[in-house]
Image (cartoon, rainbow, N blue to C red; front, side):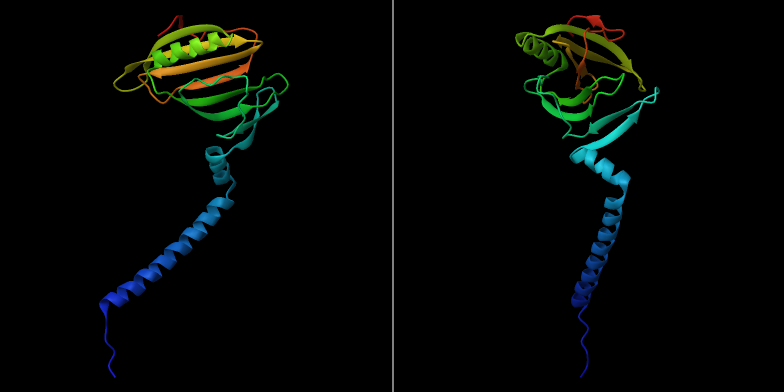
Length: 192
């Protein structure tokens, strides 16, 4: 009896062997990556939240939750109609206040979002101060961006909204506890 060589059958066996090899490589490298503390930290920061201690110059450690499942306070109104993703929450520590930040995805222009959020906060009883800043971005060739701010304060709680026209994707909302609103360096009062 003579064996018949079937090239298509040999390719199927070779491909099955390659798939098994690829699965083994993925399993080993994925397992190693998941066991790596650095990878787990980055994974948690993107998918849930990671607890991280920040040591300040005065030696105080301030703990934070970093990631989309970090807490956002119920008293801090989110801009209506904007996408919202919490990035960090810093717990209070001796000499360092509690604060947090979220990234925004705006569906309107920065000036329109600034005006809408200022109205939303005023209707909710906040004291509001809009401001803007035109700055040259450090790029080649240089170009301008307009930063539209809303600072608001109510009952010792402060919000700072920032929307950027000309450098999209840099919009955010910061909250903290404060008794005063300090103007953003170089900004001018008023709407964009």
